[in-house]
Image 1 (spheres, one colour):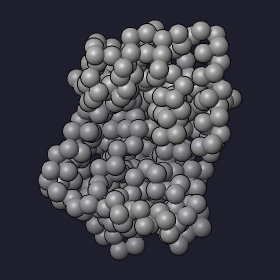
Image 2 (cartoon, one colour):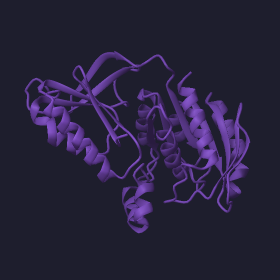
Image 3 (cartoon, one colour):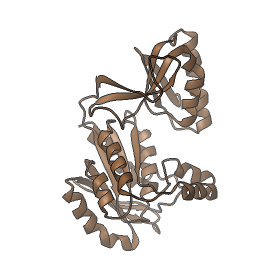
Image 4 (cartoon, helix red, strand yellow):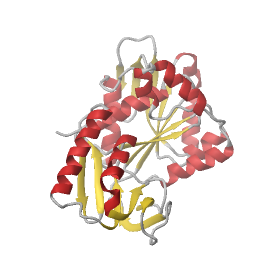
Length: 307
């Protein structure tokens, strides 16, 4: 099984991650597949090529290097724009006057009729939400037939989806970059993030929000469909407030978890209708994707997408 899958369907290049691997191996596998498609004449050029699916920054550069010169324009799918329920693309490279850089290409291609899940990870600060987000993303990716978990970082704390892997390799550099990227949580940011969540049309979307019950989080979270509450230490006292906050926004709570930093194992108390228990030692740089609670939550989210 390759680490990256690429196929052509009409004028759309479908891409997706395969088995887990480091970025260098993913780039090598993607390059081998593109070379194969070029040799077979599958990528023969044309006016417009649309690219649909997740890609790392390195793979995106690779695709542009290999094939952008063959097409008048390249458009990349963005799940945060366009008409709800329909796919839209952004022109990211163009050699043709027919297409402008940054132009939005809306399509009549609807998403499949399966439900669109938008689950928000919420709870008090310093609970390990970003660690859970990364572990959950990896656990879902490893499940056979699971949809790609699209992550929306809806808090300007500088800790994007890149942070966990960077912290595993170089904690000091990761912290430095986070501090540089950190910004203020303004109403303008909240409105923009809410728009991202509202327009997200991939089957499974995971939204990471700030750790306080604020008007900004209210604006963002009211666009979600489900929530996971995570709290640890003294923060557990605020769980009832977060429960009330979610219910007030008509968000279905699917998990209420204890972040047990000092623990040595996960504990699952109930799974349905509410997942409860604890997940232990949520520490930046730790791979938590195989832990029982993370696995259980990943399976619940995948099952929700299947309807």
